Image (cartoon, rainbow, N blue to C red; front, side, top):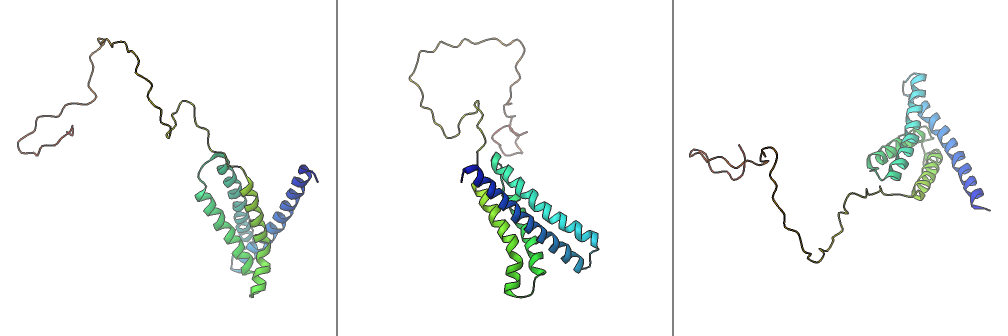
Length: 181
C-alpha cells in the first residue's frame, strides 16, 4: 500500500468515526436537554453549540500549535466541552457499567483518534527575527583594535537632560536618594 493510499484510508476512517461519534453526541445532547425541560429548539441549539465548539476548539488547538502560541486555555476548554458531550451520552445510557461504557465508546474513540492525529502534527516554533539578538548567545569580545578618538560635537539646540539632579533636601523631610519629586 502506498503512503498516499494509506493516508486516504486513515482519513476515511477518521471521518467515519467522527461522523458517527458526532451524530451520537449530537442526539444525546439534544435528547438530554429536552428531557430536562428545554424546548425542542433549545435542545438542538445546545447540541449544535456543544458539538461545534468541540470541533472549533480542536482546530484552534492545531492552529496555535502550528504557530507556537500557548494552547493551555484552548486545550482546557476542549477537554471541558468533550467531557460535557461525553456526560450527555453517558446520562442517556442504561444505568449500568456496560451501558455507560457502550454509550461512551463513540466519543472515546473519536477523542483517541484526535489525540493521535494532534500528536503527529509537527510543532514549529516561531521564527526569530534576524535583527533581534539571541538571548542565550554570548559573543566573546574581539581583540582590542585601535580606536579613533571621539571628538565632541556642539549640539544645534539646547539639550534638556533626561534625568534631573535631586533637589536640595529640606530640613523637615528625610533625605531621599534619587530624583523623586
